[in-house]
Length: 85
Image 1 (cartoon, one colour):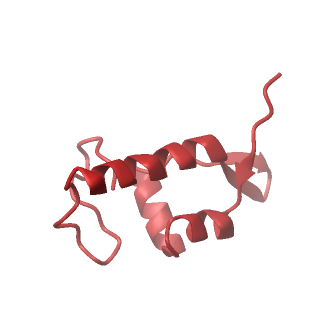
Image 2: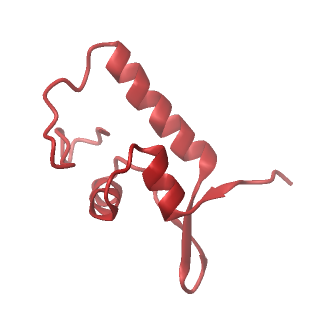
C-alpha cells in the first residue's frame, strides 16, 4: 500500500505564500485547489502530492506568462470554468 503524506491547513497556507484561510476555502469551493480529506471528525488535510502538483502548475503558468491580470484579493479569474489560480 502506498503511503500518503497529508498537509494540514497552516502548512498549506505557508506553501502557497501565506494565503488566508478564506482564500483556501474559496479556491477549494471553486475547484481550483484540490479538495481536503477528512481524517477524523475535526481534522482535515490535503494530500501533499496534489498540493505539490497544484503549486507546480502555478509556477509553469508563471513561466509561460499566465496569470498577469489576477486580482490581488485572492479571487482568481476563470471562476466556474474549471481553471485554477
